[in-house]
Image 1 (tube, rainbow, N blue to C red):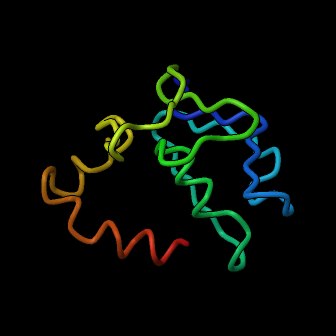
Image 2: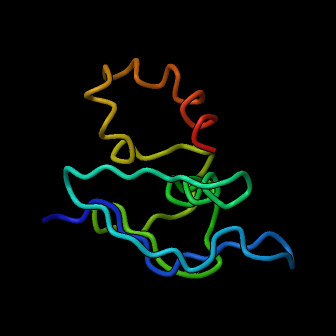
Length: 105
């Protein structure tokens, strides 16, 4: 199977506190779905922000379609990060995305 998203030993800290994300490793293949579940403050939203390129990981590697994810200028996200949007109505898929992120995080 083709790996769509690969996270290897991702760690993110804010200041000197305990890590928000601590050595998270997973691989998401073509056709698979991923759900992030956990209590408030466990790092779900931080992980999503890292994958989207809104935050920079302190350690580890994130690959999207085999290419490293880097911090995005101006908060723009590569369209390949939202390939599911085609099934949700193309350009209109952004409507309600914030509600989904709020629900998840």
